[in-house]
Length: 162
Image (tube, rainbow, N blue to C red; front, side, top):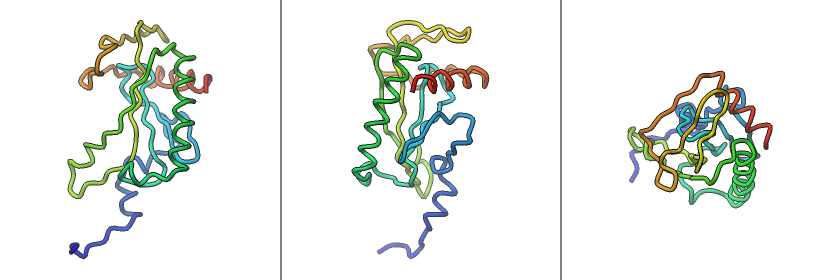
């Protein structure tokens, strides 16, 4: 038996940082029919992005076939753009949602973390981006926070290569 408390999908959306992502946000790169791509704030892996499902869903098993089909197209498009823009060597994709369970009630939302990986240093806009763990698991503790100006240039470079 449930608690009898019902939470509307509108209430969930109001509290969900992923649902509230907008194409007007400074970090927005592009969107497809079902997904939004935005630049992460940390560039220890140059071009790191978040990919958010546009509708609120907390489980990969709930994705519809057309969302999966759209996601595969997005993967190809985004990986190709990062290869062209920064000569990325390979990519790490993760779907974790652990933080959603640190609140009560939990509010998971399907989203992906995209980390381009590099077997070489990349110089871009006067900055050196170095993937010191290449060939190994990425390091979540290492951070490289760049200025809004550099973030805008990264976004523009990705967009140029989509």
